[in-house]
Image (cartoon, rainbow, N blue to C red; front, side, top):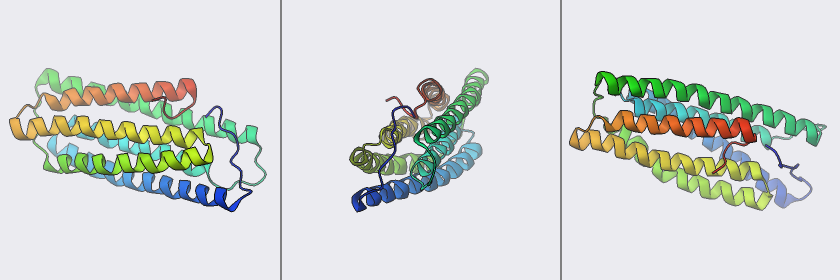
Length: 215
């Protein structure tokens, strides 16, 4: 991520902040992996491309958290330039992953709309979206505060991606609720298309700007 200088470990305060950054990143990875697995299973059972797309995005979010874990790991002897090159390479890999998943979600969403493949209502999906709406804003706030204290653009960018995930959760909740309560099945693949657009945007920005989020 361009412009991300080395983080000083000279003071106990800085060490404590970096430890907090690592803990938040571990939580991000763990939560998104769990969210992704449940979303994929629930989406597959209900035939919901919006829920499947949300689960795939959760897995990519866990990759982003993995980059942050690597970012704040102790690596003695590694120069600033070498660290920046490795980090940029990792972020680009995440970006290409976004684009690949976007193509899949877009294809599935269009196919379901064209052939009128109606997804089943998913109460589990609604619960997942609600949980994400609670957890993600809190996680954004904590990561942004720590990133600002550390003067770390990479962690602050990662926090904004977490906030974007909260907005995506709100969109998912709307789509699943419309199908669950009113039988508007078209809302599900339409939200899937919205998720695909989000994935393309994030992937493009990651590859172009070598940052995980340009919110």
